[in-house]
Image (tube, rainbow, N blue to C red; front, side, top):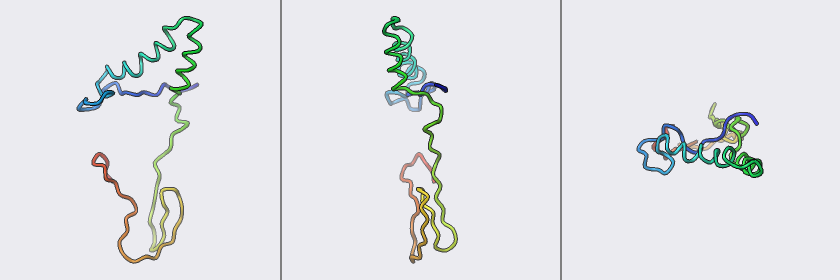
Amino acid sequence: MYGGRPSRAYVYGKHPFKSQTMIPVLSEYFHDIVPYFFCCKWQSEEDNAKTCQMYNYFRTSQDCSSYQPPAVASVFGDPHLITFDQVNYTFNGKGEFTLARVDNPMYRF
């Protein structure tokens, strides 16, 4: 297995620290480091293999094997569209149409 372990909390947290996993350093220690030590480092020899194997099953490696890059959509020419799922369309409708809309204030489009 290559890569690191997936993290449930980030070491620097997230402002304004009002969520359970967003307290700097403490959340990263509690949600990421302590489970690893309990399952893989502090177990007796006979329990270590079983619990560490279970830990690695549920917290698999971050080796980018399941990474999905952002999708691309485009409109070109007069009636040609390619959607986010890479389906081609030729559309001759009249009026104004929306290809994508983002209603989340955290993201700009």
